[in-house]
Image (cartoon, rainbow, N blue to C red):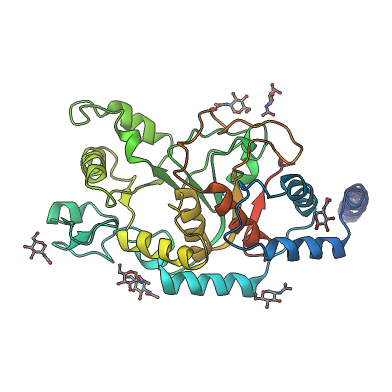
Length: 358
Ligand SMILES: *[C@@H]1O[C@H](CO)[C@@H](O)[C@H](O)[C@H]1NC(C)=O
Ligand SMILES: *[C@@H]1O[C@H](CO)[C@@H](O)[C@H](O)[C@H]1NC(C)=O
Ligand SMILES: *[C@@H]1O[C@H](CO)[C@@H](O)[C@H](O)[C@H]1NC(C)=O
Ligand SMILES: *[C@@H]1O[C@H](CO)[C@@H](O)[C@H](O)[C@H]1NC(C)=O
Ligand SMILES: *[C@@H]1O[C@H](CO)[C@@H](O)[C@H](O)[C@H]1NC(C)=O
Ligand SMILES: *[C@@H]1O[C@H](CO)[C@@H](O)[C@H](O)[C@H]1NC(C)=O
Ligand SMILES: *[C@@H]1O[C@H](CO)[C@@H](O)[C@H](O)[C@H]1NC(C)=O
């Protein structure tokens, strides 16, 4: 009995000690953090400023004060992240009503019928016939069918992710979205992938897929069983490339679904943003999938979206975290899209990450 009581006392002493250390550690941690903290009133002003940027503002314009922009943004990034559930639900409802990624982001057995004709995004006269074999290879439903996903990370390819150490943080998300089969890396961008886009042009590099599927199979295996999503029904040339790859990959990797963006989702989302002032713009796949995440996820964390060539500390950046090849000029309007992401961040609808992770 005596020995039993001694053990209990020893255990209690250890618990009290751990508790004291935890409280102390937390105190030290908050005091060191407070040194860098921006006053709450200033944070409110910055959020107000960035939440009210006009959607059509173009940071590439010569009258745009980029220095003031990055200085204020740098301060905003040191403010505690703010989440506004009302704003999130409002966005979710608007996006569902216009575009419905929840129910029609890509073709599956729930939203498509065998023998249905798919009309093209760019032409209502052209269509593609879904035969029985094609239908049977479609996935049953969506990962978000009947629920919302909790924490999502959308990982762009911006050079800002290089040396960011954000990999571990990204990998803690419940659902990770990546682009154009970008390389994964445990230190900076993480390894977890649930959905990754393929660009039809990337398939051009794989000749004679039927007789030599190895290289493409190896490339997609890096993403485990994540969904591979491709835009196949905008132009006929893309359909040929995508459907060929689909027919080759499905029998070899039946657990890893290759899927096709629905053309009505793509068309409706462009229309939605046109009405918000993003006119004459071909939306990037990054921006589109952030919109998807806003609809199907409770919390959206955005990494690697920063379309400028210097970071917030005015240091030079590479175009991508994995190479320094620039985009084709005039294809996308990333800076304009970015301001809309910043607006959503300032409203508490998503969280932009523009600085290295701790
Ligand atoms: C940026 O400009 C605004 C409005 O002109 C001003 O209030 C703010 O102090 C400026 N920020 C910095 C960091 O200079
Ligand atoms: C949250 O968003 C709603 C809708 O835009 C807005 O009315 C409300 O003021 C916001 N709340 C906070 C604390 O900013
Ligand atoms: C979204 O699409 C699904 C599947 O087609 C459908 O059941 C649902 O009613 C649609 N929701 C809206 C708001 O259109
Ligand atoms: C699909 O289009 C073909 C002609 O291209 C037509 O014969 C067929 O009836 C259409 N099917 C449906 C379900 O509309
Ligand atoms: C990343 O870190 C390496 C090694 O520490 C350094 O040489 C390189 O300049 C850094 N790159 C960026 C973009 O900060
Ligand atoms: C991951 O990123 C770090 C830093 O950018 C780099 O040193 C390393 O070589 C990368 N690893 C892979 C597998 O790409
Ligand atoms: C999207 O566009 C199609 C026509 O392309 C339309 O029939 C549909 O109702 C629109 N809205 C949604 C929520 O899908």
